[in-house]
Image 1 (cartoon, helix red, strand yellow):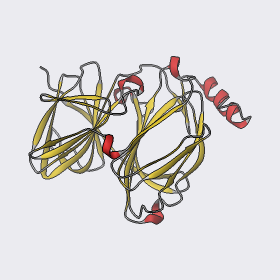
Image 2 (tube, one colour):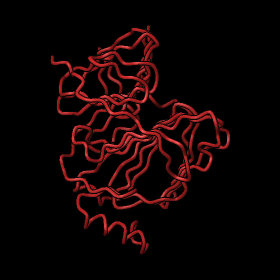
Image 3 (tube, helix red, strand yellow):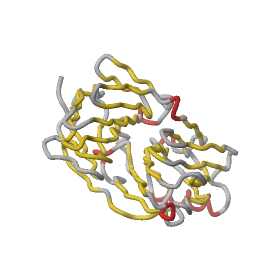
Image 4 (cartoon, one colour):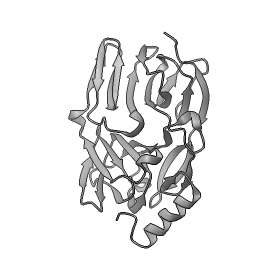
Length: 279
């Protein structure tokens, strides 16, 4: 079985979004080797002032989002009437399809925050489908306890040694999957990865030892292969593993809209301005 080798490294960039929420961002809208993923945001702060304003009502078209909270939580509301909260350890999936307008507000009790939001591209044939939403509370997320760590299947299906972890959230576009891996110092694991999928690893704690060490807030994109070897550095490792089928279509992006052509982007903006985005 071929083992995946590190292909390139992307550094997260500090920025802000929503109503001034401080985040670190990996943007890959023009990165074919990151497909089907478009963006990964990490929010991490012990100062409520960094995130208290949240993300007021805003639109999306042409993407799916996957939100995962390590600490703290948000309440989601959208124009379809969905209302739901995710807290520490929980996750949420939203497929914008042809259009959704939603907000994400920090929970009142969240005095600190650590979480991630990942944007997933929709193939052209799915960009105008009806919007959908679902969440997975912490107790519903399958875990595998190791002698030297813990693995949580946030989305998709994962084969780890003789264990199959099937997440509550499995309907994501392009078979997009997310795994949270925590390993003690110098521990290692080997994951089975479909050779048709593209795979990336984002380090949020410690260090990943590979041909070039991945540090905190770095994303490594790996070449094709059937196995992924993860080895923690001397301070341990906390990492997200992303896996999915590439879309291999043109990407036109402007703000909250991701389509295939500039004309489609103009139509999305017109539809939003005239109240037709969600019609």
